[in-house]
Length: 94
Image (tube, rainbow, N blue to C red; front, top):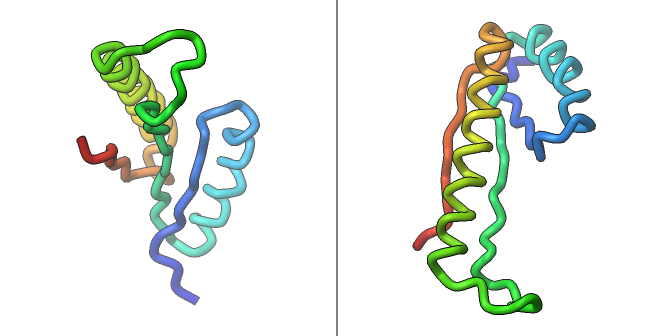
């Protein structure tokens, strides 16, 4: 059975990182490419329970989260160059 791609959704926690060895093993057995998926939550719809966040603060926070996630995903690709090869960032429409 040919399995060209394996999607590995991750929240970048230590717990989810423990699954990486299993994902890479499966990818090796099926000669598959591993695609990483990390979803950044859109915070704009949250209730202002602790005061008004303001659009500027939300955008700054969102950009920081995306940058941190990209850095960590890139690090995973560098650490496992033969197993993890593709990272794409898709954000919410703004």
